[in-house]
Image (cartoon, rainbow, N blue to C red; front, side, top):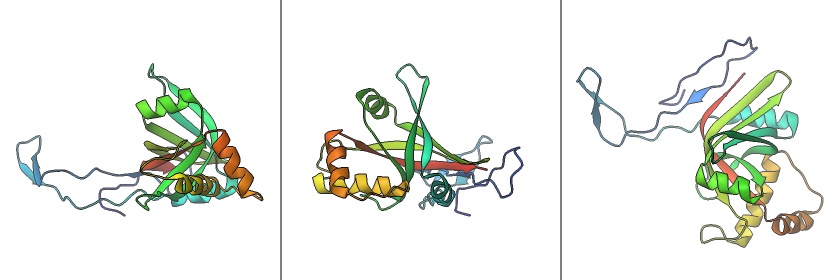
Length: 192
């Protein structure tokens, strides 16, 4: 088990251990005071990222069909159905959850409040990922040029189990519809 992680179950009967992985953020100082006033030493080495293996397995069974929940300006949740999957982050190489979206309201919500929850289900099994979203597109940027953005949109599609017979048409449609790649850095992975 990675350092700073623990397994948590649910009251639901399951045939396998619930994959709940909580990551504890690293401390910035070498020590801190506990509630009893004693000094406690904290390790400052990196903490492993949550395991996205359960997500990869369930995506393969349901073509990546998932519910994404974000927070509206008034604080209420907004859920939508997307195809989402696992891919490597184009800048860090770390595994992330990705999906593609468009629409000014959803993008405005994600930019202002990037907290995101993604949930997949297959039969009575489900896997959820909570994390922080990062947006790439619809226009190239200093961070990701036009070619890298084109390849990222393809990678998100493929990570969600998608295949395509005509990638040139796929690229054109993504560009014309001003699609944005949303990458969710996993903070917690849980499920049955």
